[in-house]
Length: 383
Ligand code: PLP
Image (cartoon, rainbow, N blue to C red; front, side):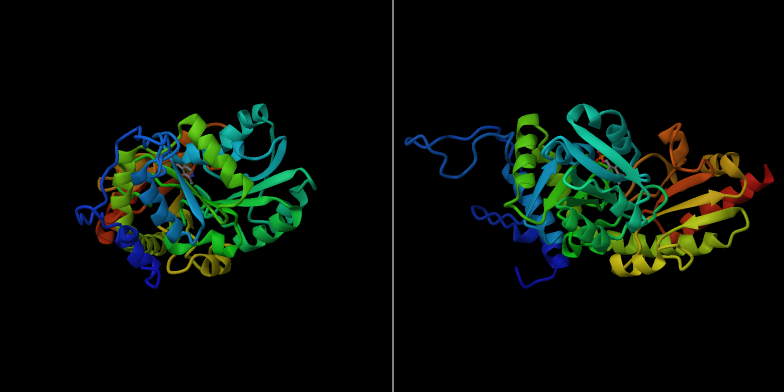
């Protein structure tokens, strides 16, 4: 399997044919405990379900291959994965994080991180100079970036951040949920850790909560600490979820390729619409970081975009409420297209403008998605 492409290995779940029966779908291992040999040893390596599980390990191996990493830890959610990484830092620690990022994690960094010995400087992560200036020599242990960032889809320069982190003796972690391993490989660009809310594209069917951390090195203290924290906190992904995630992963490449094509078509269609003030999509030549997107996201610009409405918040909400094909729901990366007025979700203090709708493009016929938005805009305009 090693000479095949990432896509082939992903489709075949890294060659996980079960040796005993020849089953081409890996079994779901639900045992929480394992028998010792008479000599009191665990010769097969498994001891208890909180530190490890064989189905979860199969899933982790597929993701390690996708990210060209050394080891992956799967968690019960993206938030559990991300927070475990922050808690794995030797503390007290200073962290640099972006102003625009997944809001619940930003809220945790703002409200809870200090009580865990973490101080955080928020910066405009599109600006390498600001990241460099935010570094506190000897204290900064982690630069956290999210690219493209939710919900404005601005980019952080992964290779540039990796250089800054290295010279500061810090780690770089990348939330690559929106980029997916299909389009970006942060570890090959110098990041130390890549995180996914696997709830989104990796699973892709809106029926599993999961998160992953993939490490460039399995020898690092950070990996050892994150492994310890997952085990002691009981934050490991469940075996049934791991089996569903493995199934979702098999179609990751075809899903993301189609979602990129449809998102681009939607962005291009609405970029010049007179009721739309901004179409935020890294694949549009008008995107402020178009060049970086072309370099850092290979094969597509993602399935996420946001539209800002000239008529302000009222127009955005009117359009969302008139859509018939798009589903009004939170989350992203699934096969069904979702729409959300993010400012309502994120509340006061959000950097998300109130005239913005976030669109997660699914696998429906793109003409249906465009027609639905067109009719909703027409209705909103008539109101
Ligand atoms: N990171 C990003 C970019 C997300 O969009 C989300 C969830 O929306 C998360 C992290 C958190 O993931 P989860 O909901 O799986 O905990």
